[in-house]
Length: 178
Image (cartoon, rainbow, N blue to C red):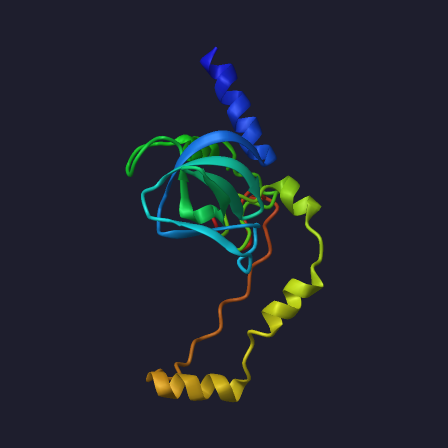
């Protein structure tokens, strides 16, 4: 019976829908009205606050802290009832969904919480791309910043070219992963 309950919880988390899963804030966090960094702050919650995770959208979790609800970044919450050093529900889900399969995408820009289905449903967002491009600087601006910060240029050797996969060992990547 416990196995069926765990399967149901794992299925709910993987699908992006979460049913009031307990968690803990890992840092002081602003609760936002939407799953956007630019959304209005509706409340603030301190590090260590107990939360109920109500939903997930991309890299964001909708949480309830006391009688307030809002969106926080996924990496700001430890999902599960356990404290530091314990294995919480989030750890179980992570372990259950990270099977190595060379035909699937298993990491995306270091953001945990994206799965294959999220990636298939991804859509181009011109406004977000423009916002990202607006953060860019010219080479001259970067040099000025580096000089003011006391940074020095360092020559970095080029990485070796990847070697083709051998037919005898088709399970290893061209980068020598083992």
